[in-house]
Length: 178
Image (tube, rainbow, N blue to C red; front, side):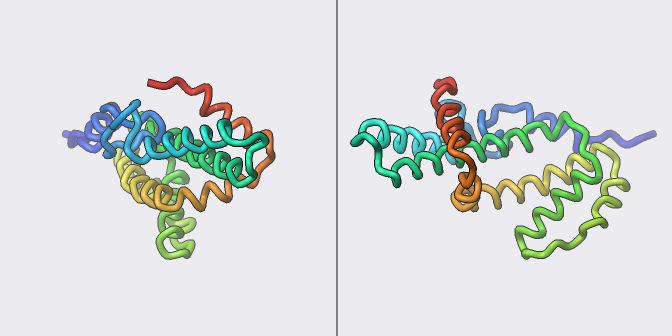
């Protein structure tokens, strides 16, 4: 008789519970506006910099505009984190995806690309439910790294076109407020 798979049940319970609208972190408590504390601070930062740009002297100072683009990029990265990790319980995690996550965590921790090519074998050896569970564990480490380094990552992200920057600000403005 096969053993019941508690990892799948646990992940389903964890990811279907109430979580942040943006980053969808399973362990961060939801505070105001359906956001966790981290995302709520990003939203406040975005609102403050937007207010500074729109209510200050016109045209706004270039530093204020860059701060607005930086805040918009951080919001975009938080939402991207939610898109990447928000539905682990319901999707198929391949051996290659598991390998990518393991290599990302190891390279973030020790700045080396160990286990490249080997982790796919681990993914093939595990049944789908256990593969999702291992992916979830490594995703928690990835999230911690992404949150810690979000300001520097946003600096890299805003090296895009002016239209993309303006689109991010417009996206934040059009988002529903609770």
